[in-house]
Length: 217
Ligand code: DX5
Ligand code: ZN
Image (tube, rainbow, N blue to C red; front, top):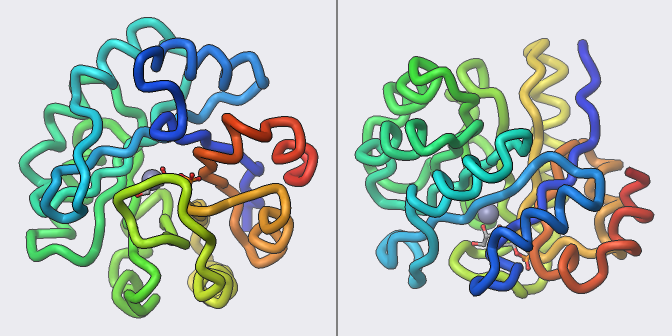
């Protein structure tokens, strides 16, 4: 089984919204390539954030960066084409809303992009199990989605361990991403449990050096 590299994916939701290009420049200057873009519809989550136009502009200016687009939408299947055309490199969709999940994951691949399935702290890991053979990444939420700056919910730790075991048993290589309330203090435990892709908004933009040292990247 291939061991995935450890990637830090700073969330630009935690950056200066008046200067998102500079936020990506800071990520690049830190020697990182993943940029986590949180897309919110004000319906699935009680907040609104960025659209395809923001991804398009940032990808055009930073084509070498890997745009990890997290769709917190009730109807993500209606937006795959728009985000794929905008330049998203990976598109992750939530398991909770009612829409054709499997065919949407296939649509992401047909668009030539990496796919991810996401689940919330209160959602059992069994809910994503049927999709594991289809995806390139599983995103474990350690906060209720909608806002940056929340505290880490340790319920995510058991899910990281469970997913690690399932990945080994099923001889799969999907990435395991953790998202929400990640700090220099808890990143080591998440990696030890099997997370290989680390989203950090607040901590990256407030405490970059400590975070990168703790994650040993
Ligand atoms: C929350 C988003 C997270 C958030 C992370 O809905 O999915 O990516 O921006 O921000 P921090 O690291 O500040 O919790
Ligand atoms: Zn996110």
